[in-house]
Image 1 (cartoon, helix red, strand yellow):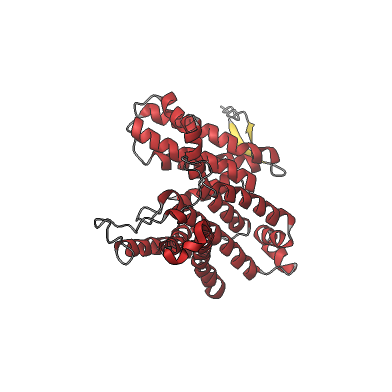
Image 2: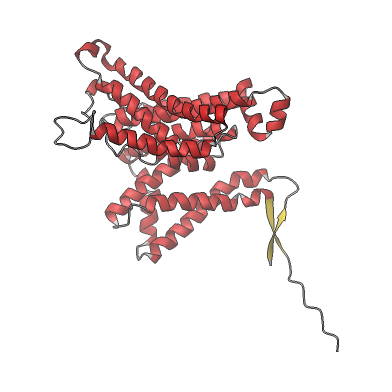
Length: 363
């Protein structure tokens, strides 16, 4: 029979192979799920893993989905490497969209001299909005030792209620036929696209710049080293004189700023206005993206593209196969649980052991 045997030291090879094995398990279980629901498994997997790469339009939509996931996951990687558990990136994303949307709605004749330059203040407002929302978590953790997991998660619902209040009330478009939405943002406030009429925008370039900046911060700066030591060995960090309070504030502000930037890009990019549907689950899906990417900037790019394929594949399966919308979440959950299972092989290895034969009875 098979049994788990602890390794003398963690396997570096299995640490790299675990996400690949998890994806393979997700494919197998996903195919079985399609077959169980009476759908063609090959057709279902094609919608998830082939159609999103089919042509330039599909690749553009892939970038639109991947950009917020990568940006948020980069910020979460800083938190998780620092042993700070920010589960409320979705709320910071929403508040970032609100702040950016407010600046976009102020555009008019008085700001015409800025031209497309108004996009910079819009994105800056998104960053500051996300940082301010994350600062609430940092303050409660720092001053009152509140659990950042619960605080950040509960603030997600506060942010969503704030969004609902504004789009149903003060910010509702008076000419919007009573729909809960703001005015449509002026063309000058919209995020520039990379290759019109495709929807991919400069947010993709900002995400790539964020990847490079985070790599330099984590692996080439003293401050990044201090954050990682605090996450891996808090007692050693304290002995070395690294401030745990500073680590909490830095990690949460960076994470909140990245989520707020993603929210600003989403509001002034594909959406072009604020509606109750701004929360798209990116903040929660980015947690999976960060872990599948091994909390490494380059790995996060690859896992972000994979997760965006799940989003697009779920929409295609819903429209072409009549599958429920929840299928996207099912594939995300499958990938996460498969990864957790495969990560067991980093610390343990499988050994085949013959079952001990029963001792003969004495008369």
